[in-house]
Image (cartoon, rainbow, N blue to C red; front, side):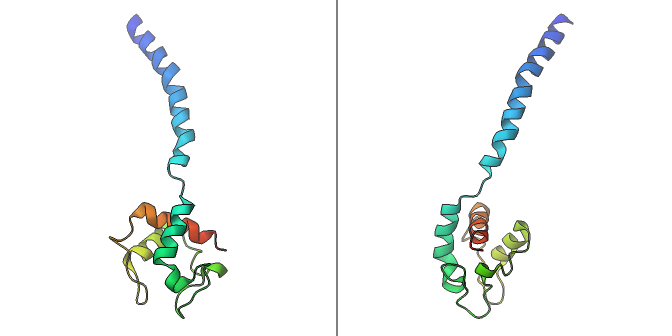
Length: 110
């Protein structure tokens, strides 16, 4: 019984701060890499959407004006993965992390 109480106290002493540290550091682990997003955007997207987000192709959204960006990231990610009539699918070309990096970068073009 005494051992159990000591173990419980030790757990609370260590797990409380460790849990808080994990919670505080977690957002940084999932933060977008804007430099990588820019590199990927320039390589894969700028041919139609323009280097600065001003569309070159008639049916490509103009990201500099915020066109098509009023959607949550998962919706945009699905659209990028699957493609459309005028946009090729990027499933297998870019992984999910890279797609999110591109989405985050595109949001900076406004």
